[in-house]
Length: 368
Image (cartoon, rainbow, N blue to C red; front, side, top):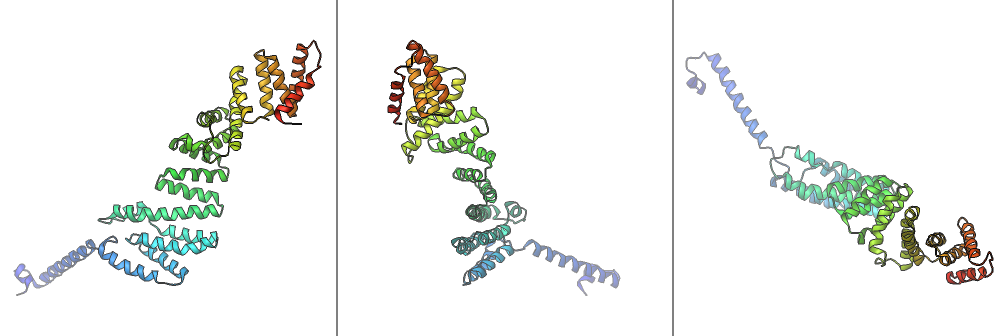
């Protein structure tokens, strides 16, 4: 007696066959389900033992371009693998000859091709892998993405493709927000005159670094704000720089170079102070300008105006004289007019002896 006859006594033979077939199909279906559930994980040790020998075999290919193509195909077929980072490092070694030759177009093409087959964190998370996903992302995926993005930033930078360099640099910063990247990103945006983006990253730099380290960015930002006619923000930045470096020179900067910077900064800071008729404060600032740039003609003009307001006629005449001998086409005529009027007021309407004042101004300035 068959198993079906024993399990279903009294049932007609044809019915028993149908029941037996149903049971068999159910059993086979269960086996298929078990096999489906037991599908090998791409992050399992079993799969690693299959992937690694194949990767090792690819490494032995002597032809660099063929090796790159094989590595690319390998990662495209197995983007989620414990050998992803190994493959990425070896692929980048295949790109290096193009970088050495400065064949930026070829290097970018190879790097972009590999970037295109690397999975995203979202696709890895959505793959339904039972275990090891977080470890894979941390130890394989993110380092691989960083490796490719760093190279892409550098290659696009060398190729002077600033928009693409900026795009890749932003992706790299989003992946791993390292403050060391901020000056590089700001520099890239400045190179293709995207000043709004430059200012955005400049603010990040100022937030992350003390003024002793970020003063260069602050100065460049101030220049941009002046161009945008935002003098208030520019003065705020220049004041912060001068608060730190007004009385000293930054490391690795020549004193003459920094003197020119200080003269510029104090001149910008002084301008609205003078306009507000705060003449004592304006005089103090313009005196700093000529301290660091003794031939700054417009500063002498405003020093003369401030001293005149303070009823220091002799001081005003001496300052106007320096503005005259420096011969600023815009300010020298006005300075000459005011100098002569003040001088005549002190000498009964005579200009006798004024040539001596001018000679003294020339001697002090070292001009002929």
